[in-house]
Image (cartoon, rainbow, N blue to C red):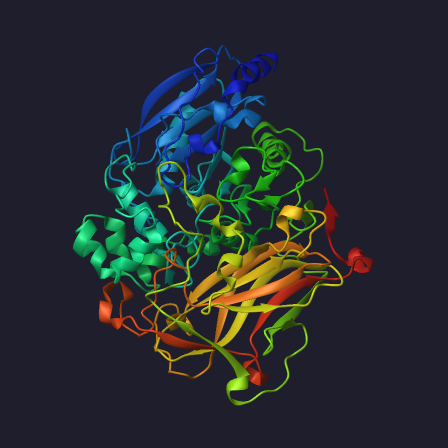
Length: 638
């Protein structure tokens, strides 16, 4: 171990993001420092069962004679700059590191398929998918590398997180622990490409164009306007994408067009469907996600939920913290944008959670304390809290926070009203949609920087005064309100059109005069948000048109959270029908396939949000019981 501590010291200058090895979707990693003096580096081409070979770089501690486990990362983003320097918190414990280019990417052979679906013919010995590539690689590594203890651990964030998850479907006996981080679980229901039926336009378009323009996936789409909001408004119908720009050459875009609904294509690809069918959790799994993950917040929670249904051996864990996409993997994590967390949350995760967890399962090292089922960072109070299940089942009361006719929010039902007094209205205009972040909206992978990474923590005052955004607020809180668990918006709404999107934001409004944080005075911090495409209100598979001006219920999943709305703050809800261009503009006229809509199909719509009687809209909040009842909760604070 003295030798390994020397390696840590020698590499200390080279601490960089884990995403230098697995960059945020498509971003070019920075150069890596040399590790030649501290590790023996070997490039190999590992054969798969169908004869295709995968380019893999292996780093073994120089002069090592111990039997060490293998930390293995697979990625479509190039392993050219990967290396142990990106895992400094693991190096000291002693591992062999292996990094592999995904099939069809960079120096690996074969054909790259975005989110390749699991093989259907499992009896075919030559049938391949990401699970078989992982299995065959594990088999080769453990049989051919010297000085291993025969154990493999996998981790990765974003697309590499999904590749890690796929290994669960057919795990090699040597695979002893995995940590999928920011892994997608369903690209139609809640991850990168769609949210509850609504297409994530700017991300889905720019990512697909970048990843599939060439084998390296480093060519950004060339916008001719520095403000992509204006570019996408000018674009009009999504039918113009292939007509003017992609010309049917990007397979993933063609998949979007061919499969607008939640059909067999998307269901076959969604990993949680397969995890639901497993009878046990095959190996210890620790999912990791961030409260403000701008790409894959749904995935970690959905994967954890699927595994938890049959976790009979206490192998399923989740960690949720105050991070954006991959924020736990690098830096200190003391803040995100203007929001301060009071401690170095990312460093804490890497040192006190991830490193001991892998050492326990790969090196048989005892943990100082048993791993909690769920470790979550409670924002508002800025503390780590442990739960014995997620979301917690005890010590939480489900409460309805009603939208009121006076633009208020209350836990008491609103007063009865009739006619126009029963609802609030706004006009949604496809030619002037609500922007999802401050102008100018740079391209996702804009050279010189983009607001993409932190848009979820932008101050929401920039849209609060728009006439097409409804704003509801509580009075100033006279006590803390602790929200822990699943949040769901139940909107009773109507549109003058025949289709519509419904966007709901749950916001923490800081005091107008904030003595503790003067720079945050009046800040509107989005705690939870999401969108639902109205045509899917009764079925994800079979869309139906709305009846004009007839109210219907829309249940919008805002996912889980752990946040304390502090005394002196206010709770706010914003409701709107566009979030552009991260979400494509709904024509607001029902058409069979929005990707093929005509420009003439796009129309203004008058929207109604109801707040009375059987049509009283509300947010379902899981509110923790008072501190005096804390004994009822299986909670400990770190």
